Image (tube, rainbow, N blue to C red; front, side, top):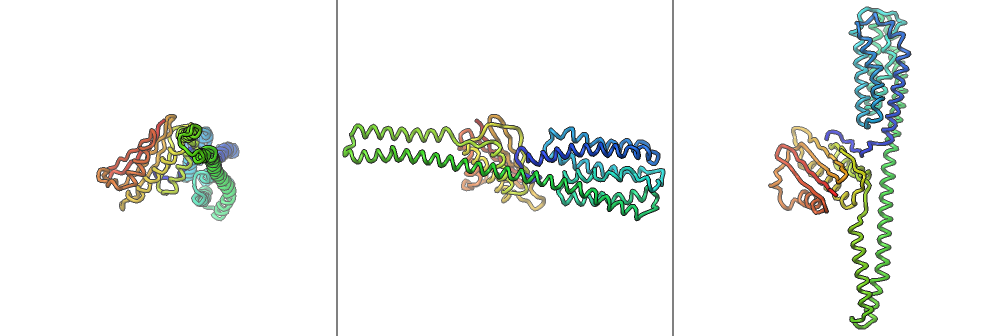
Length: 399
């Protein structure tokens, strides 16, 4: 639990789609830059140590193709890691040009081919990192161009190198701005979708409650009140028609109770995952939320509610009692989905405790977690902890 981006299983459909498209465009741009740089690439081979050109070319132009190849099967987090890794690889490769340069100086017209590719490093940074980090990386990458140009021409024209660095900032800023705005737009679409689904769920729940209330009101009016009036007007309890009507009313009430118990309201798994992720994020910003496995069948609403509330209670306990002065507590909420059920594991590496020493009146553990979940049909809950060894709370449900 070291990342607080608690996100549902789809990890942001619109944002992920935007980044996948940008990855393909980025790979195409790398191929275009390769074609434009090919003449300089071969012409400048004599200025550099053997084989550096080949290694640099593979790192700069080959890596985007690999990222594009795996993009359709990569998650949002994985794509960000890949783009961030490429930004680092690109920077190291560009900086390695200086020690690799052995036969200078070059003519001022023959600028090193790596200095014209800065946008290939700054655009992935905008995809991988927060905007502030991406813009700082852009400034640093562009200013690196100046010393490379100065080394290349033997320091003949420092002002020209500085002008080229500022020109590079202008060009790269356009690509970074486009990437940042596109990703932000995708993120906003995902947030709006989540809000719309939550609103639809609330509307559906209100409609269902209204229909159930109308059914109950009709039953009370047509059966219960009619039976009471019949009994009052009959004047004697042995009236056969009154007894028959009372029996019918009792049967209808029993039928309504059985129907409510055996056909609970169902919660779609995507909504459950989103609700759990939101609850984790609202409870603490020091927990990572991960999802393992798949399940397509819906969950009964009482089960989903109990599991989420037990998870929140476990996190609250961790925030209140697991903290230590030496180091921050690492927390993780792991949701495991299976065709036959779900399981939530809440783990922290805090100071822990002795479960046997917990008083019976500690409602958080005894009632809100163990008691509530274990009382569910097919529910289960357990708490493991040792002093100085952290705590693990597991709640789950199986069909």
